[in-house]
Image (cartoon, rainbow, N blue to C red):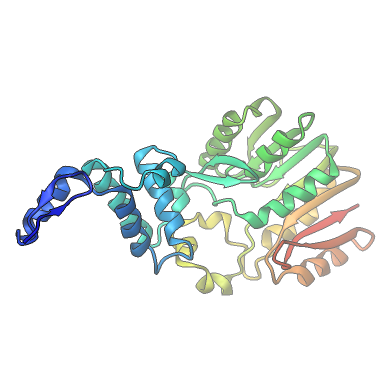
Amino acid sequence: MTPLRWGDGTLRDPQAPVAADRKTEEIVGLSVGEALIEGADRLQATTDTPRLEAETLLAHTTGLPRTTLLAYPERRLDPTAVHRYRALLDRRAAGYPLPYLTGHVEFYGLDLIVTPSVLIPRPETETLVDLALAHRPRLVVDVGTGSGCIAVALAVHLPETRVYGTDISATALRVAAANARRHRVSNRIHFIQCDLIAPLFGPVDLVVANPPYVAAGEWADLPHSIREHEPHIALDGGPDGLDIIRRLLKSAPRILRPGGALLIEIGATQGQATMDLVHALWPSATSVIHSDLAGRDRVLEVQW
């Protein structure tokens, strides 16, 4: 029987015991291509993008760019790297969020640090950033800043703007401060540990917030990875999901200059309810609901 040749040129007897094959694998390691096939198969039931996530985890494990991995699928991996990669695959397959495994996520074109202490920034929040940039504010308050994704994006794209980022969580503020340093805008962002805007005085041009807005009855419908692993304090909006939004609508006018605006990210089903709140609290205010790219209600804008 003709011997079979491994990708690294070594020969294998096709009648050799399986245990010997495994021993050889431990010596020469998997190839990049084999590891990606294995990873995509392992994540098939967990994510809509199993191949992409497998590539991301392998790049994180090896320290190599995805482009390099894809360019050299025959490259052999160190067995230690294979073990680390498989451990990450196991955690991701069990529902642990990908950004918490890698420690990074992209938001508004920026590479941001994330930890389980902060909500993972999501593409729909970029709608709020777009709207905030259109106001071209000179002074902004980002309420519940979390990872600092909104504050940092605004500071990066508005070089003359100063931002105050508030959060009740000290660990979240440490992540936000690290992201401000990472993108060299820490000199224009001042982070404060507090409840909403309690210690601040105006006038400011713009208040922005991605507050907790998940209603009590919606918890069971959240994806497992969010419900079990992301910080509840950043998600729980109370019985109707509007507890923090209600408080912000009451307090924001205190620090806004005349003509200033409030932008709040909301849930896709909360448009009418938040408009009703504005009309009840501030009948003379101007308000509008903005949709995200998927056409869902996403941002409440209020001007006094």
